[in-house]
Structure formats: structure tokens, C-alpha cells
Length: 299
Image (cartoon, rainbow, N blue to C red; front, side, top):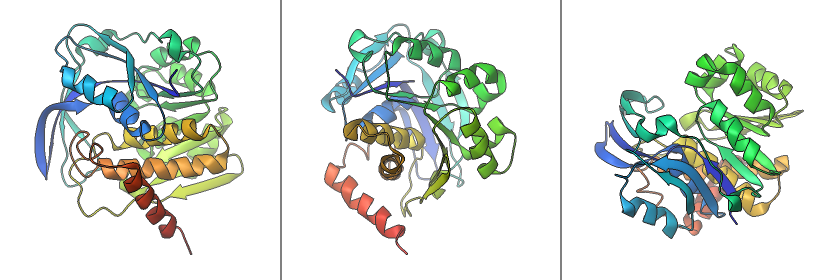
């Protein structure tokens, strides 16, 4: 049985930044988040790839203890091409080829249905609702989304939010979702919808947590070498849900620790393209940087 179910995209990315360029490397929200989660727990991916998807990528995930039985294979793999300028917080899309991801309909394997921790990565909210119908009694459902769904399917997105425990958006999405430039107001509005916690990702500036009657601010890690921020938000989410699944404790105090662990994984991910940096680190590296985060918050 898996500890956490992660539903989202597995893709081949072509990325250019001021510090290099890669072509058709392993990417996708479910890829980054499941790999980050695997440092703490056993995740299972629900996704679709094409018949052209390289076997070595699946082998890489499986070698990390990630269950890939929820990955369906058909057609051609989803591809994304984009670039970053010196503002590394904003990706500019050159081309998107949805391919088999366009008709993706998540089917949850039987052995995943009893999982207590679920991360709904950025996909159509109608599909996110279908996933929740198949999960029996989750302890924590964490939901991510994007500006496209806020603009085109807000009603359905609101339906998913009301069934979730943790809402995860970046600062621009939070302002758009709640129609306010003020993130504190956005936090209050999110809690009114019924989620227990609202996390706002602020890229290199860390993350905000809004809960009923409390607020937490996790710092960003001051990296000197940033090569590619692609997948950092998903690495953050994966580290978070993985730690929550490992500890099996959904209290806010534990969620705060999970947010810092997520920030640690995101900071490592930014240091190289694709999963290159995450493939090099150990749990000892993670703990060392976690201690650095603790020191940054002492005063």
C-alpha cells in the first residue's frame, strides 16, 4: 500500500534559462512531487504517459520506491517547452503539446484507494473531483491549481476546494482566485470556503500559511546557484505531503515542519535542471539544510 497518492502530469520538458538549456528531460508536476515525497514516504503516481516515454525514467522513479502502477501508457507523452529570463519566478511558455494528457481520466488503483494522504497536483478540477470520488477516507487532501482553471472553471475549482483540507496556490493565483491584492485577505477568504489551511507559495521568498487563528511564514533559502526553478513548487508540495504521510500527523504544528521540509526540497531542486539535483542528495543533506532553516528563524 502507498502512503500518499499523487495525481498530476508526467512530462518531457525542454527548458532554457540564463544558466543553460535541456531538451526533453523528465518533468511534470507528479514527477517532481512524487520524487520529493519519496525521501519521507512511499508515494504512488496516477498519471498518463505515451508509448514513447523512455523506460529509464520509469526505472528512475521505481528505484526511489515510487509506485508507478497508476501510470497509464497510451499515445504520445505530454511535452512542455519554456524559458526563464533573469526573473526566475516566472516561466514563459513557448509550446505545449498535451498529447495523451489531453484525454487523461485518472483511474485510482485499488491499492491506492485506502491512502490517507492525497496530493491533487495541477490538473482540470473536474478530474480532481473524480479522483476524490475514488479515495475512501483520506486524512489529508492537498489541492494545487493554476490561473487557467481559476479563469475557466472556477465553479468546479470551488467544489474541489470545499472537499480539500489544504489549498496550495502561488501568490499571483491567490490574488486572482480571491480578487484581492492583499494576501492576508486572500487567506481569510480561503478559510471561509472550508479548507483547514491555505498555503501561498512565494517562490524564492518562501511560503505563507494561513490557518484559523494563526499564521506562519517560512523563509526562502538564499541560494547562490540557481539553474532552473521548474518543478520547485511541486517539489515543495511533494516534500510537504511526504513528511505528513511519514509522521501521520495532520496537526498544524506538524504542518509547519512539513512546509519547511518542502522548502528544503524546493531549494535543492532549483540548483539544477530536471531531477538532476534531487538525484544527488541524501536524507542527511535534507536534515542539514532543515537545521539551517531553523537557524534563519531564530531571534
